[in-house]
Amino acid sequence: MSLVIHGIGELVTADPAAGDGPLGVLRDAAVVFDGGRVAWVGASGAAPAADEAVDARGRCLLPGFVDSHAHLVFAGDRADEFAARMTGRPYAAGGIRTTVEATRAASDDALRANLRRLVAEMARQGTTTVECKSGYGLTVEQERRCVRIAAEVTGEVTFLGAHVVPPEYDGDPGGYVRLVSGAMMAACAPYARWIDVFCERGAFDAAQARTVLAAGAAAGLVPRVHANQLGPGPGVRLAVEMGAASADHCTFLADADVDALASSPTVATLLPAVEFSTRQPYPDARRLLDAGAAVALATDCNPGSGYSSSMAFCVALAVREMGMSPAEAVLAATAGGARALRRGDVGRLSPGARADAQLLDAPSHIHLAYRPGVPLTAAVWKDGVRQV
Ligand code: NIG
Ligand code: FE
Image 1 (spheres, protein in one colour):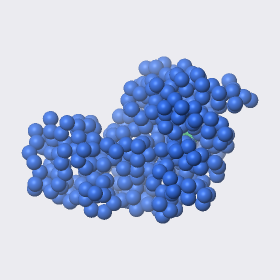
Image 2 (cartoon, protein in one colour; image 1 turned 90 degrees about the horizontal axis):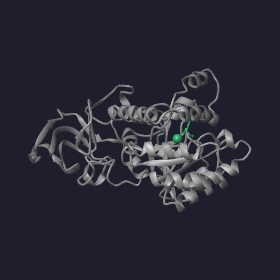
Image 3 (spheres, rainbow, N blue to C red; image 1 turned 180 degrees about the horizontal axis):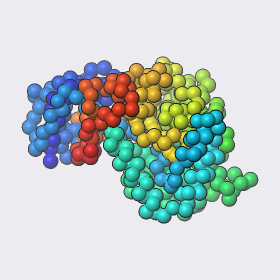
Image 4 (cartoon, rainbow, N blue to C red; image 1 turned 180 degrees about the vertical axis):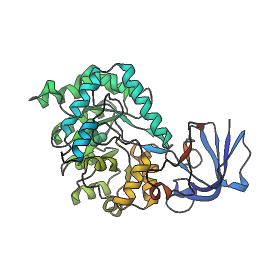
């Protein structure tokens, strides 16, 4: 079945070669989906016929969001921890263990149902590609179960056995790093595309993180790193050194970190819903963009540090708090996320891309930041099939 969407007031292709400006905008435009791909874009009046037609009535069509960082395989929540934080308790990585306990006790079906609920919640808000990490199991069998269940909903599965040291290995972090790099890696790598590590005080130091990333690379996984979230540290430079696709968080950066990102293909993935929820300072997107680093925005949706599934919320925060223009933020939430996942087929709406798109109940992409908290997503297609 082919589909033509015509009467698009603002078509954001997110491909600068396909239209005007960095967002590659076309006005009074149409797009044709065929075989799950974008077959044609151009002037609405010149659109070829298709099996089905949708009139966008002057509204904005843009690529589905690419959420390149999320932790969706877990049980329970930590609403009480959030409430305590809002009255002054600081966020600490140790809270992860609360979710590990709940996750271990949950059935496969309970984990699966929660995961599918969150993926559906994301789709309703315009997200069509989502990365999903393990990291709340922390035994060989539990981590294998988490990546196996994640692989049921996305090809972008990340093995994050090195999230924190579980209680069984208190006092023996080296032993846990050996487990993650050995038996756990062997069990999980077949389900995953990416290897991640939480390189932070209270989690894993640079040497431990390097060991895990190198073992992942040897198992055919590509590195990405939780870096410089809670304070300055070695995570960003380790990510660049290891050729990581992305260094995520990037909240506390030294000049050398910014320089390292700017002179490498490693994407700086910013997760402002976390700073919202942890009351930490927002990362400085302007500094990264001005230095020439590639920037992505993602939710980091997880029950601890930030439980928002909304990419539009992240776009609004990036514009209001992080020095990004609306165009830069929308680009970072689409093409930027695609780059962080090394995907050329998503995050853009030009010929050959996947037919993953969202129609806004608004005339332009600016409204995503201009009308925060408003559910603007009117329709969503994934692989050319209407989802919402
Ligand atoms: O990306 N930083 C490490 N992991 C998550 C938090 C997980 C949690 O608190 O449960 C994050 O912020
Ligand atoms: Fe995370």
